[in-house]
Image 1: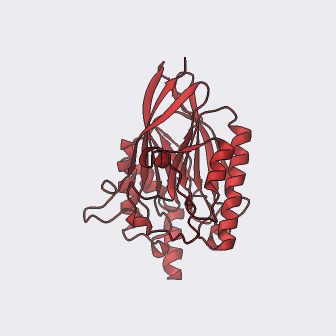
Image 2: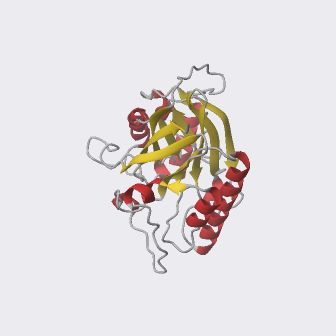
Image 3: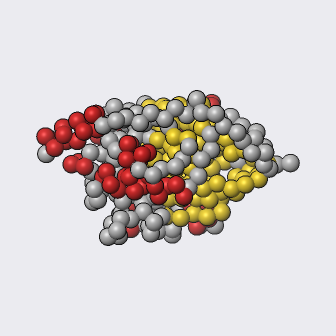
Length: 302
């Protein structure tokens, strides 16, 4: 198994690297007062095939994912490690894409693909991680996307610390405090979307999602659209369901949160756990997560 892993790494190192320079692209923006956009967040299980927990072949599955996310205006990707070439070069049409950090161990696995111009892109590493999460510079990314002339929204792509044992949960709580502090410093007064693999549940007593939302004035799209704005209550005996069994009615660890500001109102209109779209010809999931998508309406506040 070790030699198989080394072979996977070697293939990735020798494969032609894709460099997409977002800052140098020229763009023109429409003059609009309202519109809509779709966001999808997807953990694509991009670790080397030999150690991946996904059932399907990684290179072909991630190539398929790259073409399927064309249907969404913004795609936040997690675990984009060893197969970024397939994600970007197998039919993906997003004109704005972040530069992959590369292989597992060296990269954070976070990439964003967008139909809107991306500027001011930054990566930030978590200050607290545990276990295997320490093997990568795991964290979050921050950028600005320009929806129209004078209409800018800050987007965050995150992958929080995994596992639910006490040390891991403590590190994850620290992740959200770090992210909240960053948002409150770098996105003051801005409309924002935070999407990614939160590795958290509202009902789990060791998580601090509600505190995070209060500190940042964020709202959760699943709670708003599927639960009529009713926050799940803390369950002392909480046990999470299998991640591949979730649907729109059950909570996913993959979440999309948002915040409006004085200039721009963001309103989620449709929430979907994309169970039907992201499968292979045999109906097998393309990753070990189901992607989650939200359609937002936006308008300028007159």
